[in-house]
Image (cartoon, rainbow, N blue to C red; front, side):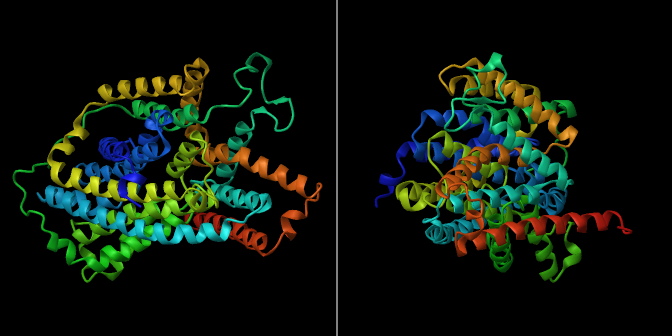
Length: 498
């Protein structure tokens, strides 16, 4: 199959544009890859799916990679997965090795990205082949397993995470009850607006863009300090031989990042921390970690870009979003009317090939854009937020208004969920579990009802369907056990008498 038959020239251009914009937003402290995708999601509605995915994948790769810029230069991780990059990246900057640190991190990132892409290419179709014959029972159990991810990604409070997920499910059920002409959870005054529930796009943008902007505005908009950043007086220039000396570290960290990405609910921070700790354990000079040691920087950046391909495996083969970023990518598929899950790869071979090629293009674009223009990209972290924030708000409003050809209620939805995105963390409601519950709630109901119809209302169908359902129940119980084990282990660390 010819390259351009799968990925159009427009998709390639949009992929480069997405990487560029993702790097810009990822480089601004507080602006994450998730937020970058959420802001530009409405634009994809007017594009073909291949072109839309080119843009979104570019934003994903660029947003994750751009986080290393503030992490290395000003000791602030641009994304959660860049946390460990600060440990040795910033000390290198303090020693006058900013350019060396940045280019080393970029080179490690592109290796991790390509490694995870190879694993995605070979492993996702195998997983889809196993799941392609699933009935509504197995599909319901897969969604239940995905919902147990809520327990795994709960931050601090397991009960709070479960409550957040259930709240998301309840809000997703607002609107018309399936197979009945009856509205539920809808006040009489909003029957026409909420007949089909809240639109996904303004909900996503509100939670992750407007809510984040309000949080950043509350914390203040001071300008970033420029001390210790001087490209003209670097002590050492970057050489690729420096990366080749750490080939085992790069490979080990990429494997860890990809594997952790496959596990729903674990997240980029865990990938970065695990790879960093393993690099320190295997190092001949572990005492140098935290003082500007290139090994630590390479481990962190290899792992967090390895996370990308790994996180797409459960999303594309099972329809399970493992974190907020892949949940928004799932929303992009739903926006285009494409169902992600076991049937996705076998029934959409061109689209699957397009995603793989888009990831190749995005990683190449990330390397070329960052490596050769890094001196200019670093200036983005010094742009005042009072200039950026109004631009982002206007883009969010226009995108929400235009997504359904000009419905004002979508703008109100944007601001309602933007306010909730700001308030939720303050009252203990966790946004990632809420979002996963909101996205999966309607599908869970649909497959549950279909299963009961097929079995004439026999609830035991969920336990007696066959060996696949038994395996899925074991995965569900294992996921819950893992979540409760982590909760009790955390309590023991904070309270020895527990």
